[in-house]
Image 1 (tube, rainbow, N blue to C red):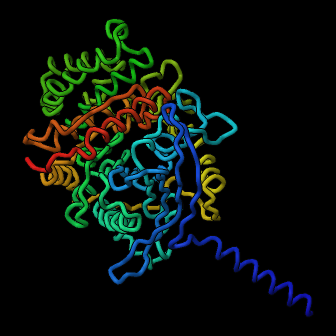
Image 2 (image 1 turned 60 degrees about the vertical axis):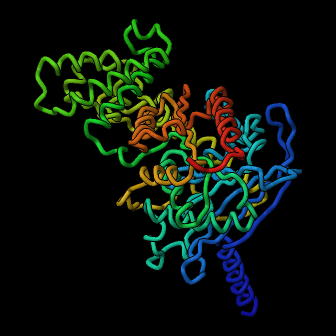
Image 3 (image 1 turned 45 degrees about the vertical axis):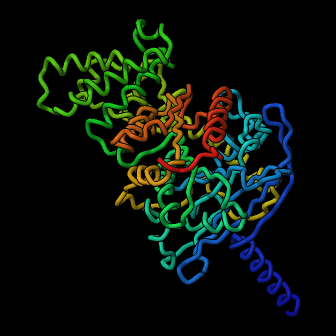
Length: 494
């Protein structure tokens, strides 16, 4: 009987310890030392990974956000050194993507086009921007290792986290604490966001200024999703998908010979001009467009998209992107990827309006998931049994009262130092490069700040940095942007 009691107590004890190990610490740091060679120069750096609380109005923690912070060693004047604050999107995505494939000191072991290679893992990033800026990668609530407190149940006040404005508000407050703890108030500061992160950083630019009195030197939007346009439908969104159709069809050699024999960058301006000057007005007429004009438009759309004129007429000229992914290469037996249309998929049947799955995302999850789990636990020594959420439970997400586009305009108007860099891949079918250009055009209707915007395009998809050639170019573009806009020595005035 005594042995049975002891055994039962031991079982309870083990269960208790295991349960405790499943809770992320609210406030902790782990620091490790590393080195990397960037553009031929050896660089020693410190990696700090851990959690920092989100506080409520009473000073109690309501979430623990996981982050990873890289600082270059032996910097004489840390105050003059820029700080790059990095977010991914989703909403609900961890910061893994740009962390382990773009700007950080380690990148995935993948081939030169971005496809997975086994055994999975990481390698040095010879193009990282750590040579010119320190970097912090932030996981919003319920992404990565970040969690609300409590994690589940009715006690979680979801309205404080899971919506455009809530997300911006608590992250701005969290960044104030982070910058204060790490003594970075004097540093030139940059925020970068990918995909939904584009909406996030547009909103943060003003929230940091007006709520935290933290002024930025730059906002970088990577493949941005502008929710004033994204998934809204209508003439504008449908029309400005056409240049992306042109790019994807060109890559797969599905355009007419006259276009196919030209370089991509020679034909995109044609498609862009047609989309803005002809297609938007035609689609705005809806069912009242004349038959002659309708046929002329369908014929030209077929010319620029690789689809047939009949398919376009069947869609009343407004061809959904899902239909394009499913049917562009239907005769070859393949679908194309949503986030990167260079990728091919195989569906159960050829007929249909959308692909069965995202060919590119399944490929990326092959390599990112094992790599981030290995890297954080084995190289950065952050040990936990908590699952790393590549995509976390953040929905329903409140998209109401989205003023982020105008938030960015106001922030730029108030802060003459603030500049914007937009980076997009031509083969991104989710947040297309031409949507990103359109967003850039719409931020400042006056046009008086357009010289502070810069757009860069790349011959790849949503995560354009997966392709080695674009990894180098895109990092070089960020590096040049930071060097040009940090510590100008000029007064912030008009």
